[in-house]
Image (tube, rainbow, N blue to C red; front, side, top):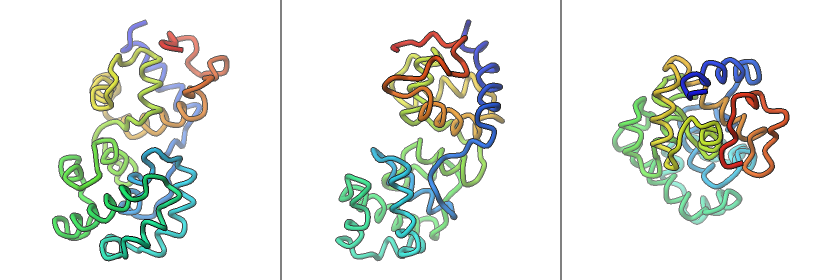
Length: 210
């Protein structure tokens, strides 16, 4: 079965399995989601959510992060790992947001990726999730893995995988497809010991690399 033939079946089954699919980071403003997504690099969403539960009340908005004592913020971010780099990224992003966008999170990929620490995946998370904008398809490690195993993309780089997926998946489905694929990769099509026997697409997946 060709990739283009698999996608309608995949979408239908993702809708059945994850009807309310959402990105699992907790946030109440687009800025909070932007910070949380930066912190989630090489860290679980669960741990990030534990950290941001106290972080966001302490630093309410970009100015608070921009003006925070660096050493104190590093200590606050320590549980997320790579905390020195993440502190630099979050503070630089906050300052750039204040300087260039009046502290408001922009609504295009092109503008978002001008911010320090923000790449295309992070931009898509914010635009898809906070604004409901089909700017592209979220491609994290889970989406990349599922796409490769299903034969939807042969590429390794996230941007190339995203291009393949955007050609296959209807644009009106992008904001659902990314989060649903993340959940499928996190809980079924796992990196180690994927649960192929109970997978919703086991009949159309060639299990490439498994």
